[in-house]
Image (spheres, rainbow, N blue to C red):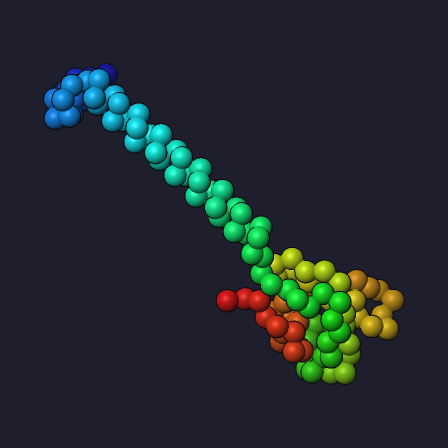
Length: 123
């Protein structure tokens, strides 16, 4: 069984250093509130930044021509094929291959940029 005497002694020393137990409690409470508010504000800031500044995809509705062969997720593209961007979210791009009955396809922006002039959003 361990003793909490060492912890009690540390608290007493801290209380003496700041001017008493009430001041120590006020100080600890204040620091806790500041940490909580900072964390909450930081979370809100990052969440809002992510919502307001998604990776830019000005390519919705644009048609691209494939310049080199490649395949991804059941989709094979050859030079000369064309695809239209239907939707995009971060790295996931929903495309329609023109003249294909099996549309749509979900692929990554890095794949599309490797086979066409699609702008890669990866840093």
